Length: 212
View 1 (cartoon, helix red, strand yellow):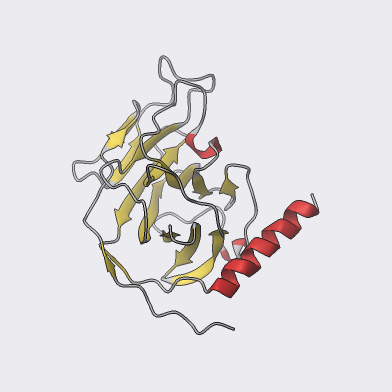
View 2 (cartoon, helix red, strand yellow):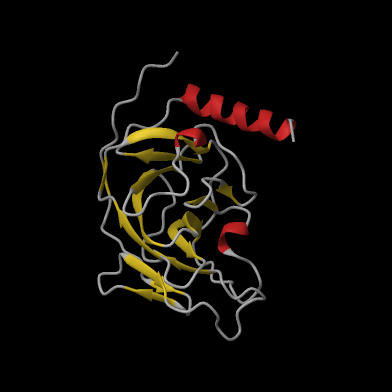
């Protein structure tokens, strides 16, 4: 077994949500996104999925973390999407695009694909209001992990989470009134999963897929 890694201590510049599709209202500080309108002209068929992203913070390498706190609503998803992705009118929800990775506050599943992940049983569904969930993105390993109270709940995606051009923190809001606070950590202090934990998570997911 590998020795436990030291907690990370990587400095990053401050960032907030700076880009939003129509229907998303951003707070003056840019850290709170709220769904202000349920239906908008020109949206795709359901008209309900919109996204806001931290477009001024492109993550291309290294380790990053951010906390997400649901302030209102249940149908909220948070995670990362490709830098520059703006295609809502084209008919695709951000959490159904390959290469993106979102955690659903409602059912705890990983999107796209509504997949289970090792540790999902530790995730309270739906996420309680005002409870912060922290995501750790490791672009050197292509993984994303889920934390609550700085304790590891599990590995959301064990590998493959790398995009040319980089990734950005993002939220997807479904219902009118849905609201979430996003705070990107200036200093990453979470203890990342070990290589063994990442491998076990990948094997666990492969086994789930094999039994479907």
